[in-house]
Amino acid sequence: MRYLLSTLLALFCFDLQAQSVQFAGHYSAMVNGEKITLIIADKAGPSYTGTLHDGYTTLDLKLQLTANMFEGVASDAAQNVNIGVDGEINGDQLIFYFIVDPYGEEEDEQIIFSRDVASMTTPNAKSASAAGVIVFPSGATHPTEMIGTWTKEDLYQSGYGDAYMGAGTTQSMTFLADGRMADAGSSSHISGGNYSGQSSGQGTGVLPDVSWYAIGNQLYLQGIENGQPQNIHLGKYYIEGNNMLITGNNGEKVLLTKR
Image (cartoon, rainbow, N blue to C red; front, side, top):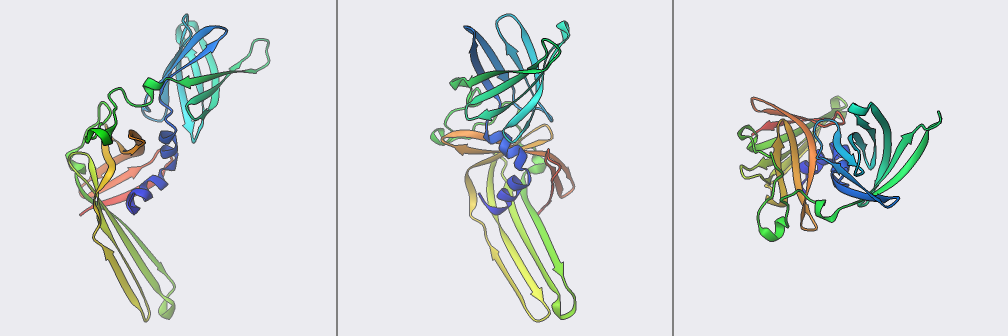
């Protein structure tokens, strides 16, 4: 991935980690001979939602994910049931700890869920590389105001007089109408009391296996890993005039200007 793309991913690393571990999906576990089904939906807003069903009871889940650790609550409003949960992601397994209080003292009950193979990608996902097409999730759009070349600029200054140093870099990325992305080049310059220099690169064009889409006001990138699409949530975007502000769920912000 080119530098601007890598910069965006580094700034919003919490979302990248959350997506790369593929938290959403269908899971199951066997407890005392009974099958328990766990479904975690794609992230919507700050939390993941889902359901837990043991054949008799269905609990609603609301979970927060940080890196590979999660916590939240399993509830049944009709039965006034609220159970604290936490755990961790270990490959294609979710290690759930249910915080129960049978005799006035909290205890953790562990259940290990394994991902169902059929849920490892979105329902209509297939090998995008093999098919030669980009497969986007349901609800994905490519807003016209986002299509075009966007540039991130960084400026640096230090010292004064003979010790003054100024430098700047620009990195550009093109959002294409069909969801593809292209490296649109970069440049840098440096100057001081008795020196100056600059360099530039024209860019390498369309990036293989990298695409973009929006769902509502949330911006996502999609990459291909092992022939399957991996969706990365960058955060909320806001466009006014020729400026786009991207705010990650971890609070980091990036300002881009349309060329």
